[in-house]
Structures are given as structure tokens and as C-alpha cells.
Amino acid sequence: MTGTLAVLVLISGFFSLLSIIAARRYLAVRLPVLRAAAQISILKPLSGLDRDLESNLRTFFEQEYPCFEILFAVRYKSDPALAVVEKLRGEYPHVASRVLITGEPPYANGKVYKLDRMLAAAANDLIVMSDSDTRVTPDMLRTIAAEFQDLRVGLATCPYRAIPGPGVWSKLEATGLNTDFMAGILVARMLEGMRFAVGPTIVARRDVLASIGGFDRLKDYLAEDFVMGKFASAAGHGVILSSYVIEHHVGAPRVLQNLLHRLRWLRSTRRSRPAGYIGQLFTMTTPLALMLLLVAWPYWPIAVAAMFLRAVAAYVASARVLHTRISWVLLPFEDLLAFSFWIAGFFGSTIVWRGARYQVHPDGRFAPLK
Image 1 (tube, one colour):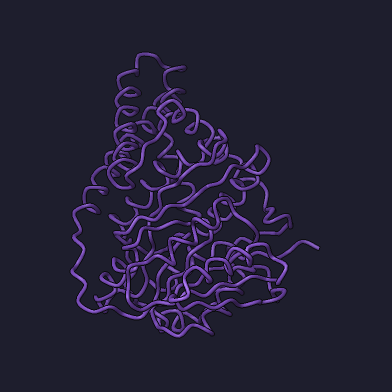
Image 2 (tube, rainbow, N blue to C red):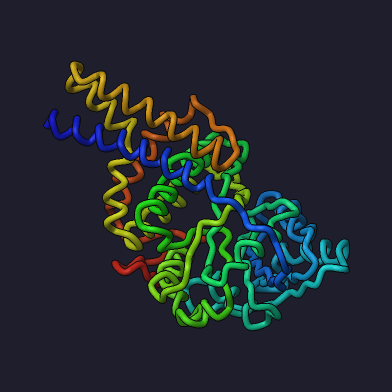
């Protein structure tokens, strides 16, 4: 038992070392010079008033880019997000924009239905799909357009810097996203290439989406972002981790909201990438090291070395890659909390999403519970 635990701690330290190397390789990529501005359509599915919605959407209207449009989709005219959109459209009349009222979706993933409706109405072939809780700088579209000058690139997923709300649960979640989650993406990119995508902002060519079966193929998946990248890679299209880092505003969930959100995410991940989910054990340095110290104090040098590497990896992912600060006080608590949620993710197959309950199937598809 002690030997096995010591090996797990060593492996977790090695993973931290890998994530540091992977971050350096990612940062070594140089953005090409933009030679010609491709026309871009931005798709924004909306549902209710997210925290700082107006400020988030405003950054997309203020893009320093010559040729783009923004499409918004809400389910009903009564959605309060619609008033925010109309206000911004009035302030930026020079930006081409449209609003679609989609009505009730015919399948479980309402976000995918909105994206499908917007894609059909979009005028351009380079498509930016971005959630309502994201914020960008004025050079975002220029960066994306420069990367897609390489015709081998079919889809790009933007890394994101999590910005927490005022609550401690929001800060804990942001700490995990800015360290472990980002590190896992970087290591996967280095070892096997980008064979997946992660929200909340993905860019794709229209013909790439068509080649994988369009949104009709994604409609039944809970993690439609992940499988979008998976299907694109399997079809032979180049998938990249963009050099542009967006801001993802986490919000301020209460305890129950945070619990349900994390369980939904983990139960989806376990089914989307089962081997990778089990492999997350090797990233749980803090709980593994603490257990080793408790049961076998003579192994303390291994535990301390692994935790040191984990701290360096957390710094590199957050400060160097995502350009943000983390709370070093909250980091060990988030590590222990993430370990607990990871164990919980092995159990149960139901989730709660926007107040409705769903059943998640072994292949990652989901359906509403009657």
C-alpha cells in the first residue's frame, strides 16, 4: 500500500514536470502576421442575465477588425438578455448584427440548437462560437484570423482565464480552472496533439463543421465542445490550441449550485474521455502527498518534491500561460475539493442543467428525465 502510494506521488510529480515543459512549448509558438482579413461571423447563444453580461458582450462589438458580424440567439422574446443586446446594437450601429428567436429546442442541448440556427443565418465561413460569459480584448479577431491563414487549421479552441465572482466557491473553481485544468490541456496537446476542443470559445471553418455532420451530429451530446474537436480531428482536420486567451467569468454560485455544476462537468468528462478521467488520479498531487505523509512519514522527501513541482506547475499555467494570479491559500483546499469531486464523479449518471434533470448515457449523450 505504502509503495503504491509513493509511486502515485512520483507519477503526479512527473505529470507536473510534463505540464511545465508543455507550457514552454505552447508559449514558444509565434503568431503569424495577419496578411488578409477573412470575414468572420460570431455566434452568441444567450439565456438570461449572466453576471456582467453587458460588459462581456460589449467587448465583441469593440473588435478592431474590418469585417465581422455578430449573431445572437435567445429562446423567447421575453428573455432579459434581449434588452441588453438591443441596447448594444443601438450603441454600435456600424457593427453588423442580428437577433434570432429560436423557440423551444427539439432536443436536449438547447445551446447546440441556437448555434445551428445562427450558423444557418451567418453570412461568413469562419465561425466564432462564444458563450455569453466570455470577455475579450479588441485584437481577438485579428489573432484568430492570423491563425486561420494556415489552411491546415480547421478548428481552434481558445484557452481561457477564469475570472471568479465574489464568493469563495467561485474563487475555488477559478483556481482549479487556472491551474489543473489548463495543465491537463497543455499536456494532452504535447503528448497526442489537440484531438478535442473545450469551450467557452471555439473557432471553426464552416466546411469543417459540415464535414463532421454539422450540429445535428452534436445535438445529443452534453459536452458538444469536446466532441466537436474530437470529430474534427478524426476527420483529418487540423485542431489547434489558439494563442489567444479569453476571459471566462465564472460567476458567484452558491454551495449547491457549485456542487451541481461540478458534478455535471465531471460526469460528462467521465463519459467523453473515460481513460483520461481515470488518469486524472495522477494529477492529484496534494491529496496523494498528504496521504503519503500520514501513512509513511519517512517518504516525506518524495511528497515535498512532488508538491514543490505541483506549485511550480500551477504558477506556470496561471501566470505564464493565462496571465492571471491565483490564491496560494485557496490552492490546497481546491486540490482536496477537486479530489473529492473526482471520486464523486464515478457515481451517478444524472445531472441538473439550468433547473432541468437529465440522464447522461455511457457514450456522452444525454436526454431529459421524464
